Image (cartoon, rainbow, N blue to C red; front, side):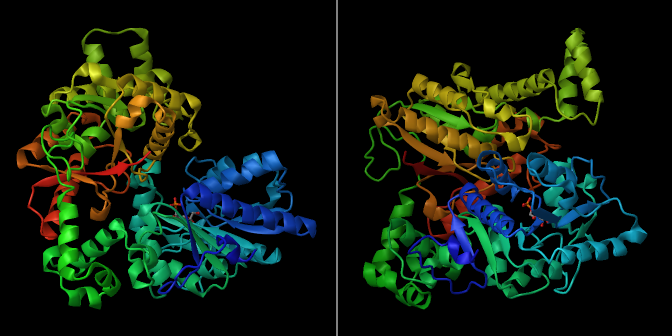
Length: 634
Ligand code: F6R
């Protein structure tokens, strides 16, 4: 299939600076469906000619939805894999194929065990061959690929190091299948699924760059903001062995399939005025002015016509008259986003305030995916809402037991023991905790871990003065899927959410609008909320509802995206820190932090202080820290 098939009709993109063809989808699901369809077409076309379809496959989080869709097509549309031959890119070394961390396990779990591929057609590098046999083994792997006439299609992900397969920085363009030492950043990225960096293997067997480049067609997938920097470097930067993915610039039939977040740093998306005419709406003008201020290191009110003209923004100036007028307009707009009254200031003129003065007091419903996102992301704002007399409800969407360590659970069990509660359940749980490599926690252990998080959440909110009657534990069922990747939204998730919204009838909802948490819980929680909002949209009371989004612990909005910025004094920063401390099980050894090793309170504080600094650099008042929100129209 020609890569042009990915283009939407009539879509002409300005691709100056780009050295690799790429297409951007609204989300990973849409992109994955298109890629799965290309693979299915290839399989069917080859089958019609009586030929094999030879696929190079990847593991990791990126291709999962492509495999899901292929499995669906096999089940529902009769797509057969009888003529499919596969070669996987890589495997950790050393690695037992039965190990749940092995790429063998991964491939069977996500694809092979669900389709009719003949087992002898499956090839995955073997992580058990002896050191002295590896060279011969790798040569034979290459030979095997060649014996099938080479790869028709190679699916790739990309590491933050710029690796494809496990070809880490420094890999030569002529490299072939071989043993390689993994880079630190790659091991850090793999650490959460191995429960710690020390458990991640140091080596892997990988197809070489040259092996990959010989594929007739290559599609690389990249999702989420986490990949945006390496995508820009790969697509727009010079070809270099420091970023092995840049070798793909030389491949004649490669497409990068991206979601909007992964594409967000490409020039045509990040600073589109450099490559084309843009529609200068409010958002775009704000973005351009903030960008120019950062680029020149000058506050907004000091930017000159000359600086706009020299930085591809003459068109914007022409429309607005002069730098003077534009600067004042944007400065005021940003100024008006700042408020110490997140629930609106009663009896004050609210023409230029982000929230309405009335109704007052408001009923406020804060949705927090995990029990702690509320205080981490908006502890300062929560505090103000309570102090300013609003009726604040907090709803925890999932139970959060996955992030409670055994050590933490043991501590609470022992407290029970000291209190003399030696019933059978306690003894059983103690036995379970001693069993280190158990596949999953029992329902009773999950309940214990969830209770720990509940108790922490209640004490944090009590500290902030929230009425404990207004704390809601939703325990959304999607979270309880046996495996993380099997989590799916159901009617019940939406019903529970709709019921709660109807019970509270809020004037304001605050919710996590970020899509970047390592396990996708925030993403699913947000999807559930958006569907529930559609349900209540026609209720008459909902005309009075405004929805504000905050970002979770992983990210922050950019200035031009922010509709409400709530400043914090040094004392409020301390108070927020203490509220986060109540979530003790999430300190120190916490498991699902992603690649950022800082404690959550440090992350929150640094991010809030950094935001205040950014406002200050633009020439606005200097605050200690700030929390940010974006208005969501439903
Ligand atoms: C996996 C592989 C790697 C991954 C890359 C991205 O077989 O070879 O190159 O594609 O590390 O991993 P994810 O998709 O987990 O972000």
